[in-house]
Image (cartoon, rainbow over all chains, first blue to last red; front, side, top):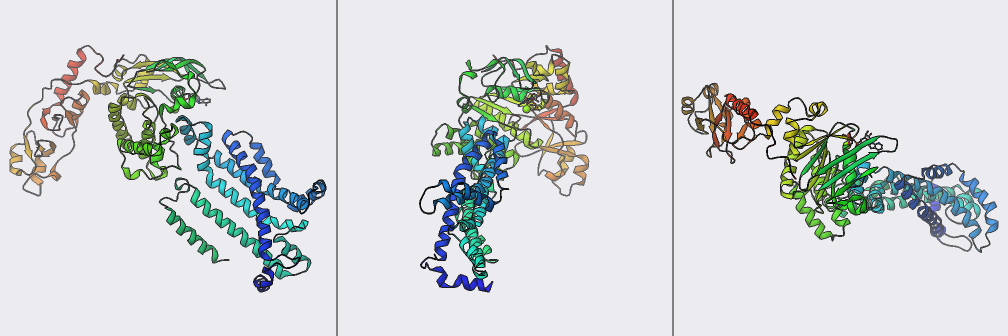
Length: 252
Length: 378
Ligand SMILES: Nc1ncnc2c1ncn2[C@@H]1O[C@H](COP(=O)(O)OP(=O)(O)OP(=O)(O)O)[C@@H](O)[C@H]1O
Ligand SMILES: [Mg+2]
């Protein structure tokens, strides 16, 4: 552990050198792979989840997406690399990037899809009935009633997608891309356990920071009437975020 | 006016919930649909705003077939209140009330100031405006539900057991305030309940449905109590319908007797002198009855004057222009056996004995049984 600390605090590791990018660059790569995957997954799964939840039709899609979680990530990556990459004639990283992103997107879809769908379906039928009875159209019911009420579940789905993707994006290094996975695979190859442990700590830290950001967004975006945090002005909400951050830093 | 023209609803699966219903709900009146569970009350109600589509027949509002207007537009013009308020949990009380005006494109400030008015109108303090539904009691939620239905000032209101999920005391308050509100607003209301007492209290017209969705009888409350059309309606209306019917019999000239009184604060000695049959009626400075003082009460009192804590508060008050039911109840509940009658301002007029009350009832029954003012509208 102390070796990892030495590795993490060594200024040399934080600078780009010829052929070996520094920690900030790898963090940036890791973040880019992860956010791209979560963004793509959200664009696909969020509208689909709303639609399935609202209409009640197409629930087998959710079950199927959940089934995808059982696929072994590394195996899938290798398979895609073998099958897909030869067809990609792009320059640069594209032949490696595409299979990696597909794997990560497949990982992020189930929590976003499942939670969005469940959030909409869980809305109190009396609330939905009253909304229709007051003269809301289907679209108005979805966006003015169902979505705001489903928001806590939608966002927690997004958070668990982010956590999983950030943790798993280390596989990018396996097909030769960058990211923090580099330290894990290179460290393993060189039996440099300080580097490996340092990399693992970086992944965990990145995941925690992103989760904290999303938790803040959730606190701000969800109506107090739904979350049960009554009487929270923005000032108080801010104070709570600071307090939570303080607590989180203790065990780290 | 709302008209059901031979309306039938058969659900997929074959249940006939409503069977050839012909019914009119007159403009500006409360029409109550009542009947046992599963008799099709909710289904009938929901066919008015097309939450349920009739299998056959038509529903007309002011002569226009509801099937001709797009459902969403139709519903925005009809107030709708349901049993479990159905308030939007993510919106404040004020924004809940403003929902329909906002859907209709009213600007936010106007919608909110109107919502604020309505909040007070249904008997809630403005302090609740910024709360969320989860922070309200059940009774408060129902009031907000009523305010929300009134927000766009619709001429027609549909209410499905709006007061049945609250305790009896709150229910009675809500019913009274609802009647007061309706007196001011004069909406055309269809009101569903399974509670015959509520139906009699609130309805201008009552439609009794039997299971299978067939109409058993439509009548004013008084007529329903006096002349149930068959055994089903008679059983549904209940045992003490004779007593309840007295609630619709107004008394015109009351043969009450003078009652000796003492005022609060007068000497106990005076009270003892005025005892009549062991009891004397105590009034306040404005002659409003406060309670009865008994012989024992006067003897055991701690002070030398008549105070409130020595009084027996049993005994209801009847008003001069009230019903026979009120009068009989006052006479029967009075500890002295003399029912207290007051004027409209609550000042004492005199007292009446149970036997006089019974005589009045007898005189009424020998007169032709019929419809007093309440029912039988155009
Ligand atoms: N959506 C539906 N699909 C199939 N059958 C239904 C549906 N809604 C109601 N029913 C049936 O229609 C009949 C009438 O139902 P409705 O809800 O109108 O009764 P109700 O008089 O309002 O009863 P309650 O007093 O219990 O609310 C019942 O037998 C019920 O089971
Ligand atoms: Mg019902």
